[in-house]
Amino acid sequence: MEHTNARIETRVIHAGQQPDPITGAVMPPVSLSSTYIQKSPGQHAGYEYSRSHNPTRYALERSVAALEGAHVADDPSHGGLAFSSGMAATGTVLELLSAGDHLIAMDDLYGGTNRLFSQVRQRSQGLMITYLDMTSGPDALEQAITDRTKMIWVETPTNPTLKLVDLTAVAQVAARHGIISVCDNTFATPMLQRPLAFGFDIVAHSATKYLGGHSDVVGGLTITNRPDLQQRLRFLQNSVGSILSPFDSYLVLRGIKTLALRMQRHCENAQQIAEWLEQHPRVTRVTYPGLPSHPQRDLARRNMFWVDEADGTGRRPAGGGMITIWLDGGLDESRRFLEAVKLISLAESLGGVESLIEHPAIMTHASVPPDQRRTLGIDDNMCRLSVGIESVDDLLADLEAAFKSI
Image: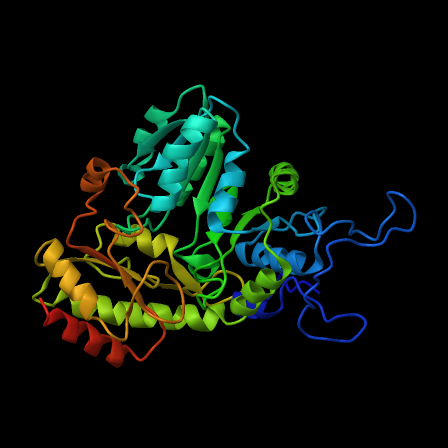
């Protein structure tokens, strides 16, 4: 039973999984075998080699496909694929392109994505890449399209400035021109945003973040509802070989079971902290999709929301768990502030149960060229906060103590 009609709070626990038919185990067993016996040459029970087929990985892939609203009927994973990291997933999606193809990407992206695009695939694959601020509407996107444009890549909210992309508008432009549309949905998760429902072709995730949720696994995922793209991606996954291991697949699958509960707490804590930060005298600017001051607040309410009912009614806006702030000061003040936090950990990554804080210009986005960082507003006084699920009072006290150091 795939529970495809159940509410998402139920699907995070049950979708894609069945009790073990032999033992009745409620959790899918971790299948560590690298190879599988065959009755006769080429005759096997659906599994021949674990790079190509693995029951534990399949369970995770089906689970995430169900959460994102994909169901490719003839595919064993229903449209989901699990990779060894988020960057491995991104790199495999890029293999859909040919040498010399044109890719249009959101101007504000995770630093590792920018690095892969600009410093690796432009050279090794001959890709032509245009970075575009897609917050200005579909007209700018239309003007950037050439006869070599084969893919549009967006994050929303973006990392780290939390800009939003009108998913419906971008998907419509891409479909009109026959261009593959890809959305990195890591920040919002399928709890708050499901890009396939807006018309996107492929959704990507760093499973290291909210899906795993416990800062103990590295993984990546792609999901599509197009059988042709799933067939090509499965071929590429098997050919490139950057698969997620069975045990890591189990860890992500276990993390997903509490995704609904965790995301609710992430959002509640982040909303309260963002409102508090906006009033703090040592903060000059706060960006958070749940604040009325966010310049794209109306779009945030259309893109990101909790769905209370199975039929899609009862939407409640949600801002996610990420906050970006600009301090009153420069690099010295930022260093002192980040060195002073105690409960909140100064570390890269995001989306775990614990709160993390980092300095994008020095840490996650150091590989982005300085002039591009300045254009995007990734300044020396910018800090990115991944709000965890601790007591919000303790988090506020930790931040207040750190502010006193500057």
